[in-house]
Image (cartoon, rainbow, N blue to C red; front, side, top):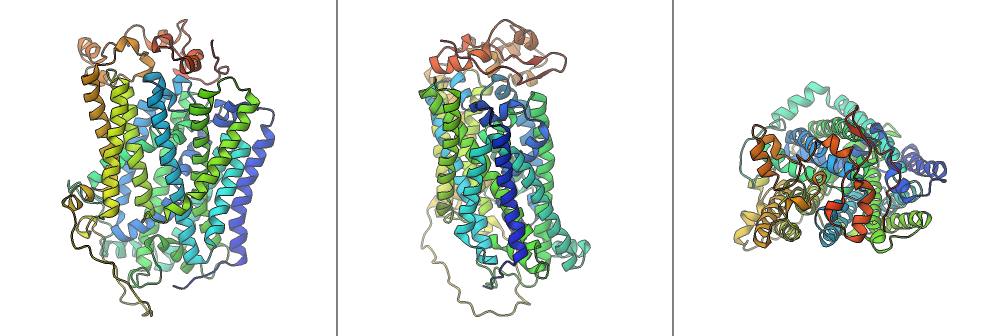
Length: 619
């Protein structure tokens, strides 16, 4: 394989990304040096505006996996990835209207604090542990995949890029906290869009114009987007993406600490919702850019596919190889694309490190040592950022065994995020579910999703289900390359062509629905939770949407939760002290009926504000 090395200007542009990202961390470390509370460090004092938070949300999950993996997916399987625009719309709506209001009004810092308020400590700790494992594995993929692809195509040193990513992210996370992460993400989001635009413009010029791109893509069957085949074993259809993709990304957005931590850092609930909806626009822009990059790349390589001809070793190297081809005579622009790819990596790794530090501090450190000083808490938070930065960087080694970066990343989210989504859904939507049902449901969901995912890893689905589109090498210059044929397994188990061939986008749905079903059954067998013992603010009465015509049926579906005791505004204006009692309830195991409401409700604006004092612990 021909390796095209960077020139001086490429290194200058690429190094500029790291310097500016680190500089933002230093800036906030100096600017916020007198604000030493862990609350300021981990959630930005809960005074962020929706603009930078929206950019941060988009950048955090549109990582290098998207920059490198999505164009490759479109190149091989077609533009059906555009259907994720539908999934993202559903995900943002459900997150902002179902999950966010409960998390925001509760005044929590870790989403898993909710699980203790709703159930008990074992459920909270189990969920926190699963989240930590999920995030470390995912971050390993995000760090390693782009470094490997860029190393093998551009000659950019593999381990130098891996360690540079880990060091820079850990540096500005440890110094500047959430504010540094959010503002750095905003800058990196701009870099990602600029990088994509340069590829789109230069690539379409090389092919002969955008009309030629669409014509060649149409002739190559790349524009067959909507396929209504209901077969769940098919890799990408309308249903697998619209339904399975919604479950997968709802596990990422709806209950993921990285997302919710940014939302609750906003100064009002309205700002948090605006951040989510503006983030949706950013998601759409990035996905559209990635899909059209894949179509342009296919048009360019239509008669000489570099993967099957042996010019590159893996599909994930297609995008950097394409960039080095079209920018061969334009020094600095390959560096801009590499900066684009690593912007996605930096933003995701930084978000992961900050979220891991937050859940570990809130769920373990503060539970065990509730009386530490603010200064010590802040230093512990910074130490946790450093620790998880080292761990996440080290996990890049494991990622080399996980195959396609897009499938690997979404599979990890599906395996862990699906059961987690089911757990929170049990808590928010089903008042009668008790802690035994919640814990049993979580374990059931994890077992099912890991079973199907590991089975699929060992016994990959046949091409008849993944349906890769044909690639041509008619006009390639023949290379002297020795190819190896993978050994054929003499036999496959019965489940290999059914259960293990399930589309990877359904892993989350399997875990989520398995968790919900098991949780409901176990709760009925072990004795339902009494609704009157649950604070109404911990439940979202979605049954009101379906029983709006009958107060009797609405009350029946509330399962004893006293949603009609007072109107929400009156309830929030009452003399109860829910938010002030949150930490006390968490530390001392008080029942939910001692918890009441979150101050900060603005009856004129009909929104909630974070402009409240620090949470108080009562003894």
